[in-house]
Image (cartoon, rainbow, N blue to C red; front, side, top):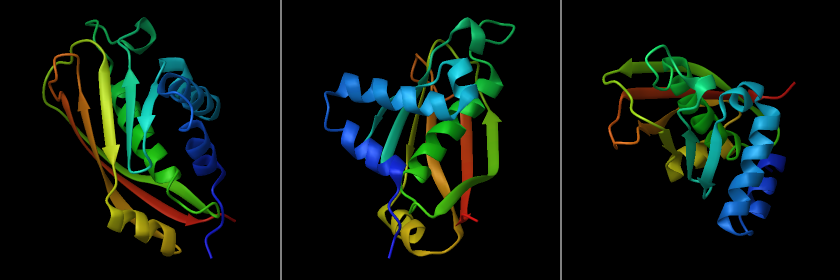
Length: 162
């Protein structure tokens, strides 16, 4: 029997509120838990349990020397968004761990960045039934012009908490 996941319980509860409030509460909780995300200003825009949408504003704290979102901030955005969707779908006795991040920077970014991560039903079932394993989480990161300046592959693993 799966152990209740407090993060999923929180997400399901706040998703009953108006969308603007739900996003603010999830962002506050995420930034509280992930301090670096707070520093760069990552925002949770939405999740339905299968997908998650995050934003990284092109703020001064997240910029590089040419005034666009720093490559490391883009990586953090993709890692945060994929980690969140994995984290809310694991049973409470499992611990998500990033296993591999592959990023290919192909274009210069313009303005704010949006990341959308998603899991398939098969991946969710595997995460909820296997004691340990790994999944490749689909994530698309786009800029203000709708261009995908970075192509990402995020491999997440999970193990039983000690």
